[in-house]
Length: 598
Image 1 (cartoon, helix red, strand yellow):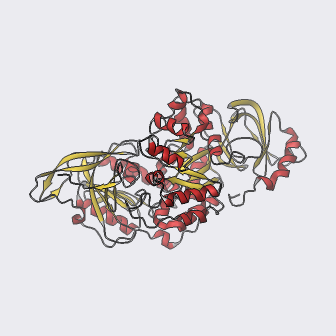
Image 2 (image 1 turned 135 degrees about the vertical axis):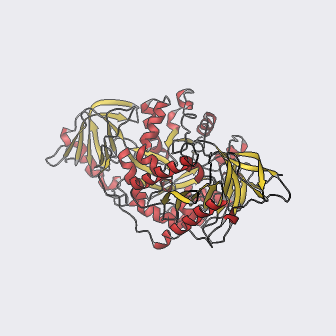
């Protein structure tokens, strides 16, 4: 049963009432479990759950009165019965998978609801791309709610995207059946300065009675933050410290704290609950960005809940942060997020609430996973040819395209350098003195080159700059058509020849990620759909991701999940220093700066 065909409460109200009263048989009864009640934050032993037409009709010490000759009986055998997990903010494209394959990957981990913002594909294919993601999401056996992207480009004037999203696009999308709200409002200076388009998008969302997602990436919690909150965003996931979480909750926002493949922002913010004692119902767990390797090898929202518990959070509070808190925030408390009558029958059976083994997963009253194996089909959308032909480069590139020219006669220069921060999205604005060889600034020590290659309109443009923190050695390059959020091509390397080879390889491939060393490819992930996603199974993409990570290590990189840092180096709405197709951007002031200072 897909999202598009799943019955609403009015469709099944009579059935729910009759089963609960014992006048009609349930389709399924889960017996003898410990009921995890997220409304009261308690566990109640020896309870049953009766389900009809994919929704919960009755929860109590005995559901024998709901049993009929054809009722399916699931024995909990004293295990915990807890709600399916919700991811409050995430991007499917970051998994390098289509919605179908992402769903297939996370169902065994107990994720039954996702709130997704497909702004990655919006930058490449515009409103049409969003609609494709939305339509495939509606085909899935779990709940995938789509937030209409708000910012393509993320920072107007700072980058050039393949397509732009307008206020009219937002108004149109609010009428689509799977749209739950507005995606993260990344143009936070625009909101704080009352930009008419940003406020028009927020107004269209609020008129539709839907939720506005936030993205306030500045550390300034003064007047600009107050102005941003006044502009309407209802949540924020860009906090990195306790003060960020507290400020958001005090101002009436939900603080979304994330554990993704490379974003480790839970431990530093959950202390607002565990040590300061603030109301936990205003805090939500999310992943934001998880690549396929993390999904296959480590988990999804179950990983985030376990991590919160490891950080000292009470297990029941951590579960609330991944269930009822999320549902309430999006206005879906009567539909998902708890095991109570009328709600979708999204249930996890687990033998331990702290280590959280996901043993059985039920979604909409159907067993969808058992002991780590997905048991249901996840239908694919028929992606058109033009969605698979999005790497539009005017020509093959050469070593000369990756040249940073020094001032005449200089033997050394002082340069602005992007500094990567391990396990966090922000970068640092650094300066290094670098040598000059034959008029060309060269990589030195931990500093290597970065280039942004235009790939939407075949302009032939290449912007060159410098980056520090990856630790690369030897002659190598890494290129990716995943380059949040404009999704041109990011190439990082120690020499121009390998950078050109890597870029040309992705041009020929039609999108993906690759590592070259000494003129030959070490690893490649092909991402043919929009240059962002593969429709291959997650296990196959994860194997290629593991090989890519090893290739990065073979080139000297020791950062945790460094690929995620690589892919965000063009995200011109997160401080401090980023690269775009228009130049090097100081995100603290939203101004372009020169690569060479002196």
